[in-house]
Image 1 (tube, rainbow over the protein chains, first blue to last red):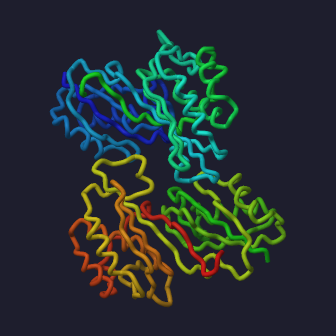
Image 2 (image 1 turned 90 degrees about the vertical axis):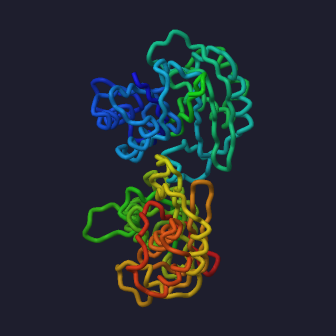
Image 3 (image 1 turned 90 degrees about the horizontal axis):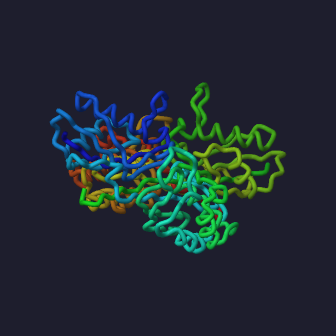
Length: 251
Length: 251
């Protein structure tokens, strides 16, 4: 096995999420990557992705790996070769060879997601695809205080939509902060793993804190309730971006 | 006549330019604005725009005016009312009443266009709609030196594609500068008027300067030649944005 790791960015607007779905005709990022890699390699290539981003969610630092089989391309040439075939809403940032045991998803130590809120009064045609527009002014300090309550090892069942069954809903949130840059508010979340819709439900709940409909302390109560009916609403996919994936060793 | 001025922003990606074209079915920004304003006003509204942006060109500060006729909406409510009906790639920023003599195009004293080059090595899915990707590193100092040669009152025939006949190809370029912000290079041009493709041909020629294929001094020679075969190529529409329109009086 020749295991190749590629860092991938994409505008998720036109895709039905990252992961290929059997039996549907919707276009997925994985489907496009497998198609282009298979054409380049002259053999069928199966891709593994670090994060199963939802329909409409973006990525600046998604990570994939695949077995290059007989394809002899130098690892660092895989990214530029892919870019020559990829549609312009997907780009390969870099590519390297990694040990056979490396798996983009199972080897991941942490993922960072960023949720972007556009908090300007007037709609912005240029931000519409990459942020969620909340025209009412948000209290960023309250949001920052609220998100801090979630840091650490917790059962995040309250911030989870029903989806694929999981063994445990306990996750470690290593970093969580809210920053304002003018009319843009960014919610940055780093965890060892994310439950289905977790990042978007945390963002949606924080927006309610920012609007004054919840207090920062309510974040803790909602977390402890493990009741997803108290959280949310799930903020729209277009504001979410998978920023980076970290691995234990320097991969 | 009740003359209303509206500042409009749009992502031009999906439009066949600003100006409505008789006999074609392509969607234009003017067509959408007239349709929505007519629905709001309950009567046919005809819109005048300051700049006839090309297909794919964007605007942050396009200006339109129209006669509101019998429509009694308070001027400042026109923008939010429009936004409730507009598609998300067009937004009304503000609206005020102006004197009957005001015409978005003929009263304009100056327009500012900005051409955005993305000068990163790797393609960017998030910048693809709003910039022109030049992966080879550009010499911004040479570009800045080159564009300065164009400042002032000149015959810009060399930077003009054939289009609607004009009385004169003399224009006054009041401001011209090139700035780098990381991997983004912005060419800012302010003039009393722009010839057909003028901003994009200046940008395309400057990129050749940035690549070292032309010297900054060549800009002056091309200008003086009045020969459009020496200029260009015309840089792609997606990098261009109409930033603002200025009027003599405070309108």
